Image 1 (spheres, rainbow, N blue to C red):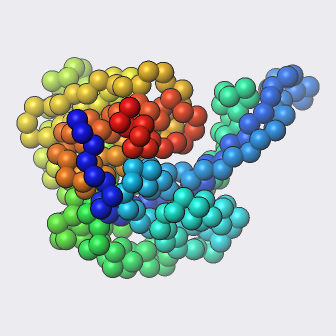
Image 2 (image 1 turned 45 degrees about the vertical axis):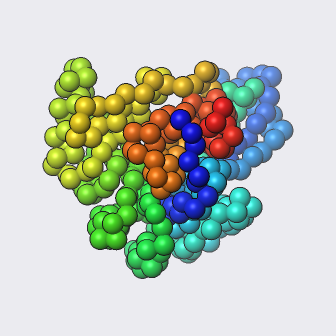
Amino acid sequence: MNLPDTRHSRILVVGDVMLDRYWFGDVARISPEAPVPVVKVDRVEERPGGAANVARNIAALGAEVALLSVVGTDEAGHSLARLLAEAGIEASLHEDTQFNTTVKLRVLGRQQQLLRIDFESSPTHEVLDSKLVEFRQRIADCNVVILSDYGKGGLAHIAEMIRMACEHEKPVLVDPKGDDYARYAGASVITPNRVELREVIGRWSDENDLSRRVAALRHDLGIGALLLTRSEEGMTLFTDGRPRYEAAHAREVYDVSGAGDTVIATLAVMMASGESLENAMRWANRAAGVVVGKLGTATCTLDELKG
């Protein structure tokens, strides 16, 4: 396949942003206080996470992206805004004085993750209402909408956002969370992984059973398509026809964190660039194979996608 021209594709990303922090160090001994390793930290990195990582992946693929989210008036929120600005991403981050910016802190010894610590809270309704107003103003200027749900409270109005996107005839892609997908009714595509989908439709006995359960879910909620990401088993796209399967492209899996962000970002960019949903899935599968070979939340560039 030849890569499409992505330069004129415009994606609006709305969802839960977070700051991914990495503390790298060496482990040389066990603590005398408890049977745990002592990590001597010698390097610290910060990267945009969640919906911010989705936006970063879109920018890496050469498309235009606007990010709409909520942060706290804290050091983590300021760091996230700075990182996004450095990446050239247009970010409208509504500040909430009663909200703590979500932070995921990972401690690594010899490149192996030893511990993850999460800091999070929920935004206030007033800030969420102002974000919905801005969403209404921005939707006409985009080709595709991504709603990146990490379950942190930033998408309280997601049903209304999907309705508005449909009114403007904009494809809306959702990265879902939780066990109730009714809030995603009317979406063009949802992109759960295996664990997330099992929470909603239960365990399936075989591929035929899976297809039946997905078809019922799509019918009940009016969802156009479902792209199931299956880690080492690749991806399966469920539409009205027969399911389409793509084998995994990863040569070596190093870290799967953030791979779902890359998948939905690539899918949206390719759809906005004129690719069919099936071809967009193929490109997304390739991109996922690139990022799982990198440490932490990462991006896939157009050059890497060509390779």
